[in-house]
Image 1: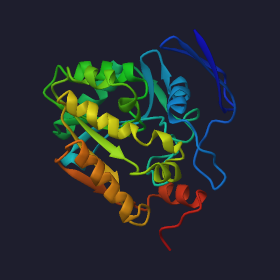
Image 2 (image 1 turned 120 degrees about the vertical axis):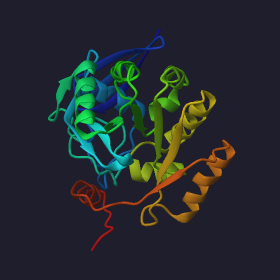
Image 3 (image 1 turned 90 degrees about the vertical axis):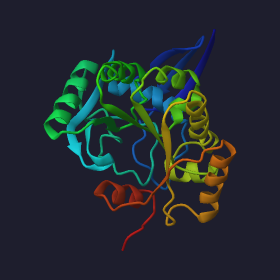
Image 4 (image 1 turned 180 degrees about the horizontal axis):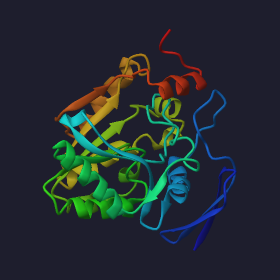
Length: 277
């Protein structure tokens, strides 16, 4: 048994067993938005710390349930907490301050609200959005178990870090007949990943590993990427396309642009970036 000590921020010590290793997260400040002085962090350790804040048993924090017009109309649960700090993120401040936001909902409560709103609006799709849905994975799996008994399509939007760290996650998703995964790539290089997400560059390959695992399991998915030229140079965009070619991905490539949401503008400003006059 190994004991590893990590320092992540001024927050209660968290002890987690992980394949025979005890991870002890020492007290330090929980990272919010990026600034010019931010130091790169380990996103998998931040994932553990965030799960300790936003999860309780199989329940997880949410701030809202609503319907929106994306994907041709979809019922959405707006969850709390992420393991990245993307400067272009549109999500509200619950991403940065999960201790202060949201209420806990059980998988059954989440399912009931998703279904009720979908029926009211006549939509056939549901999703969990806002935060990273693969955090508190047992909560997600329990929601998927319930949705799997319906005729609705569940769209799983993810940054791919959790799915990319262990192929077992994709294997677990394989049993759901009505799931489609949208993997959002943040960068095509370690430097770009670190600059725009705040996470250590060495982890930038994990979302690409997630794509490989999903492909191996025959799970429906497509790739999205924030390729806005104001944030990502064309050379890096080409690196993404090259990596996708190497894993023989030939389906839809969704290219995102950075929109001036209030939270996005403020996060860019805090990070020392300005895209709009």
